[in-house]
Image (cartoon, rainbow, N blue to C red):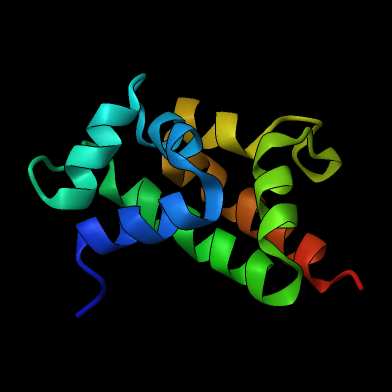
Length: 111
């Protein structure tokens, strides 16, 4: 069994910050993120948060936390100059999962 959703949120907040996690999770307030982390509330899109954690951990392992944060917030040429965080927030995961994973792998592999 994988991580509990609350643990996914805790790790993601540690890597990307509560504001980014709120955006990825489709909410406007970080209060919701705190409630997800404590288990008081379940996010509407836990699968998107899990995917974001997978990407963040991959980039952090190969590069650094700071570069992972920058990657999520920056326009990405491999994604048609769109911002990964915005794609995760605004699009169905099924439509952006493959291109985001490919872009993250390319970025993480650069030395």
